[in-house]
Length: 454
Image 1: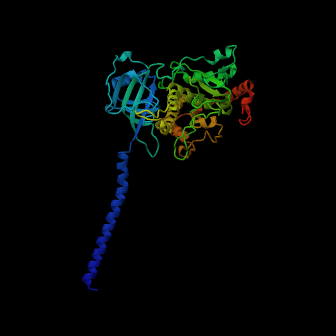
Image 2: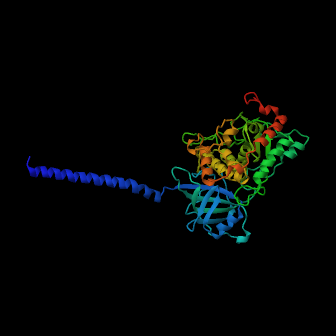
Image 3: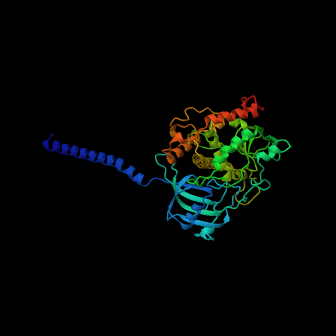
């Protein structure tokens, strides 16, 4: 081979090598730069919801359009000058149809009418209002962030007693004391259902009232949780009972989302099923089977379950769910929707939303009342009798077997990263004393489920 030819080949090889080195350098540079660019502009997700606030200061801040980050619906919600704030001199109307956002209320679009200022003076604004919000969420490292940026907030009047099922108002109730002091049988009765036995032991009910009272005391620093001044409550300790009709009772306990993909299929209490978990009656009463109390180990677990129940009542979640479940299909209707299939497709997503809302607000209320929030993520599992190991160990939310436990751990990890848990109440000894009183009141509650009240 001629020297000139060899030279050409060597030059070509050298040039090719330079090209390869340059390509490798560019690839390495891209691998370093592109993630930074992606981090600079993270992908956002659309978040929407409906939230009843009792924080008069928050309503004042919204009226003044004061930018800042506020606790809204359990999120840390940032309101900026770009946030569209709309006022409505009318109550928020809930319907029976689930819209695409997973709520039985029409979605407010950018083009929807928007009143930029309230119709009343600032010092005459109500202390409670419905907030219907749209926001952007920016997850970090595949973690659902509790920090969201509001794009639009619609403020609706809160009219006490409106949007309620006709015939059974949740605001006209008699407590257990009145029922238990009467000469008539100590039973709850609902239309088309059998009698539900109420546990009338004063020691047992007094202990439950003590926990409820501690949860309902308004916190000076946590004004977005239910307080004793919001809605009257009706909570009964009952014996397990059998239901006769579908959709007569609702049970929201976080157990309906599959662990593999987080998908939700809601199975409300089925006909002829014996209710052994916390259930909600058509009048909004909270029914707590005493078998639930037997499964718990301390006050903190009970406080978690009661907090979730209080949120469900305060945010009208049960009433909304009853409306959706009882929606009557009309196959002859020419208007949208022609049937209730939209609800069937969206109920799982709706359940997932309201369970997540119960967790956010319930844990916040539990913490404000001084209880150990590490017991909150698995409270629903304990209620169902599932054994939980290592509850007080530092949990890894990525290894949790429950979608909602993962969600709750993630929430606690972000909102309360430096909590001194030694100062929070667990109440193991107090709860064991309570169980002794409960055993006296209803020994059958401590029998195995397979042997009791078949």
